[in-house]
Amino acid sequence: MKLKKLRDKLLDLVFPPLCASCDEPTGNHDALCDECLEKYAKEQKIKCRTCHMPASDCSCSIGNGVHGLICSTFYTHYEAGGDRVTEKLIFSLKRERDDKLCDFFAREASAKVMRHLHMMKLDVNRCVITYPPRSESGIRKYGFDHARLVAAGISHYTGIPLAVTLDRAGGDEQKKLTGSERLRNVQTSLRIYDKADVRGLTVFLFDDIVTTGATVGTASSLLKEAGAFSVIPVSIARTENRGR
Ligand SMILES: [Zn+2]
Ligand SMILES: [Zn+2]
Image (cartoon, rainbow, N blue to C red; front, side):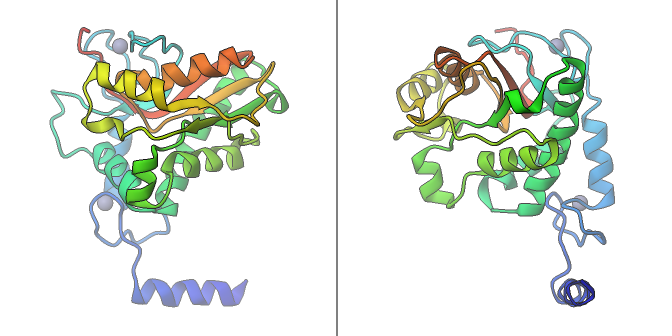
């Protein structure tokens, strides 16, 4: 243990840990420097323009049958402008494998999931945590599936078993597609993994960001068809309702 600490200290001297948001040395062992962490915390308090609640309590319609989303913050908020920590973090989460950042988001989401478990008096052994896998083109391009890494972290912190329940054949990254293209893309590529057994289970479904709800909505329907008792979507951020 002492040796490991010494090694970490030496590594920090040569390669100081950099903040995932601003790229400055963090001065700590977390993914973010104190300043960005503070900004991130403030961004969690941003209120929805429709219902005037923070993202964690906003239940404005998302569409595609997505309800009861457990979420930390809004992704895009017109009044707040760009240059937001959340946006930068999600950008890096998808592009560069950063285990500290995955761990940061896993802890953030886990706190909210634990609160839900407690409130609903759910037994972790009757729950699983799962994720819609990244598209094949995304995995080819970046070499990892960030949703899986964060979901595994949530499993670690909450004790909810991680389960692979969904499979993706082909499909493109959703980002560049329009609303209807997103829905078609996900409906044709996402399916239940043939070895998955979710019968009677409460399924926590992690996806980094919920925009139109196409991915989470389609995945929820598939899981329910496969016998899930209920599906609870979990995300880092949601885009604000734009009066769709
Ligand atoms: Zn920073
Ligand atoms: Zn709202």
